[in-house]
Amino acid sequence: MNAIFTVVFLASMIALAIISPDKLLPALLGGAENAAQMALTLFCIYAVWMGLSSLAEKSGLSRGAARLLKPATRKIFKTNSDAAGENLAMNLSCNLLGLGGAATPYAVKAIGELEKENNTFAQKLLFVINATSIQLLPTTVIALRASAGSMSAADIFLPSLLCTAVSTFIGVLLFVLTQKFGKKRVKKWR
Image 1: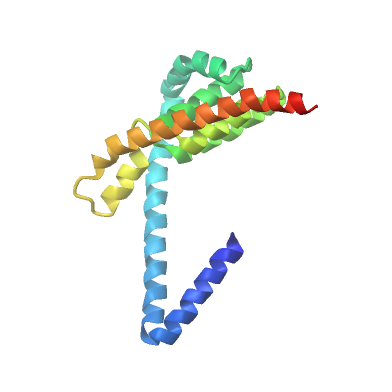
Image 2: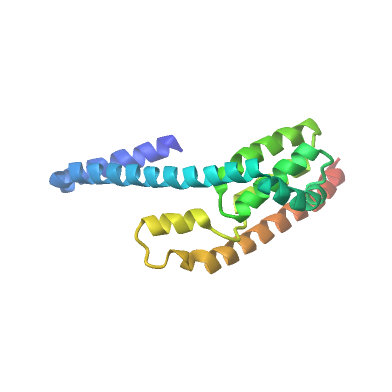
């Protein structure tokens, strides 16, 4: 992927240098400025949400939410591990709130716990759910839209909810179908 991006960048730079050399440096500097501004904005957004996540964890609020979700996660992911169930619940609750950056450490911990019990089904299902990431409240996208000057940053709420719900449903459905029929096909060929 890096090679492809490098080739595209170099080709674009050479084309701009030939077509309009006076615009090359301003375009490069403008792109760098936009990238730095976006990185700083994302840093601030994640700092706020990671801080709130830490406060919620220290106050016991996140543990309470995880306790509510734990029975469902243990059943869905077919795990007996308390640590895996707790990390799965925390990952799902962070994703539901649109905090993908805060959800990632919990997913990594959950995968580690699931590896201990050799639960590849749950690992794959967690990957699918994280890739589709149903969001009840897309906080990161709303914050990015607000920082970009959107007059109504929260208008993304309903479209985001619908799209992520549909993508998660289809992703999980396809995963379950491939798990069910994939095993039968493998047994048939043996």
